[in-house]
Length: 373
Image (cartoon, rainbow, N blue to C red; front, side):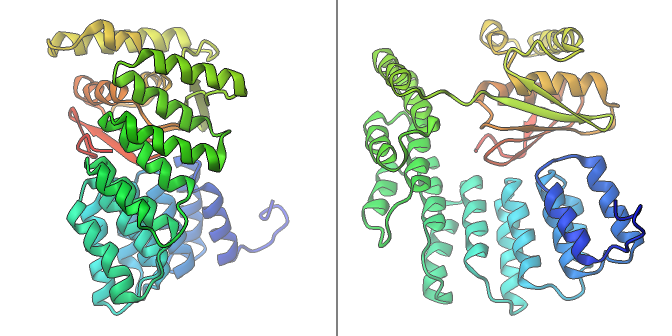
């Protein structure tokens, strides 16, 4: 539209475009915008460069984000925050800490967003002692007031690491009112570690804050299921029906040939779904051939999860040298995480899955998260 109207783009144009595209993961569109910004001479403009860093980070292209960051001659605190956040989003907590320490050495003062990024990076990498240090340093050394987001990060950090009682004690001693994100982090940790008692406590508070959120019911039901309490699972599902609560359906999407292809669980709507199922079956057979300890029935029972369908479509449709980028609207489940790791091994493909927690970079049978997410 701007070109047709012969209106010249400025730095505000590009920062707006970059912001709009950051969550789309449409890589070809991303590359076009970056290329146009370079042609227009705005690639060294700090706000534009910051937008490119954020956009690349949200597309899982953290190396390119770092390259742009390195090219900024005079970095502002937004530049530092964007790079720290990018590493945290991609599950690289130690790199996030390294950039943060470089920021301090350069004399740039952090703000509350900086510490959300640092603590988030620690949480997603299991860096408990480091997270506790920076949590204390935030108020002690930089006089940054505690916000609910910081507390949620610490709950996630302690909870994932198995320090559930310490996490609960932190909530009890919080000087500010715990939010749904804080209780939700504790509930998620309870599911991981099978603590039904604390899960019930967390859900009670979550229902008081927002009883319509389906995620709380699902996490509680999963916690009961993992503990073998099937009667309690049935009670949760009954409560959901009575309250009219519906679970958000899982979906994944992938860009191929300038189009976004969306898959849902047990999808039959995609025009190539037959080929996708055949490719997925072929890959699963290869996995079963080389990994003898796999329970084939368990893996095949979830073969129609949306992220698996999207991965199979990517293998089918994209050239061997091209990484397969997948977006998912929910947290990737443990079974699919294991399967996609093995898919990357038997197909020699790099698969990158962005779920609601972070990016998972699958390559050669391993994931960048180290199975900690």
